[in-house]
Image (cartoon, rainbow, N blue to C red):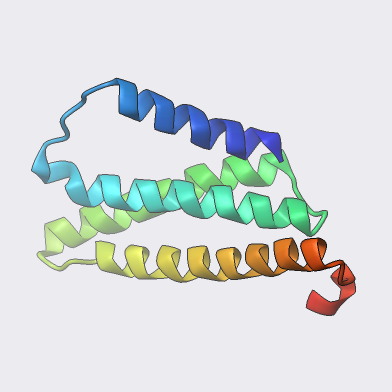
Length: 119
């Protein structure tokens, strides 16, 4: 569980400390990369709460999702279509689903409900 949280905190600290300006041409690529990272972090946190966390799945999922989303954005640029929006939609849906499950697990742990209720 600590690996994704440490990575997220380190990324926030590094991003806040450095003043890096990203050209507008790369904004689409950065948006899908950020969503891929958040999807991987929240998915791994959900996996930890469900006792299914695997660091290899976290790392391969992060890189595979980021590369696939970047390729989709690049292909869309070449075709003149905003295909990156498909990746934004897919990652957005997955992030909200993971956050909903994480919220339920946290509430159930606070209230003291059994974990079996969610499965």
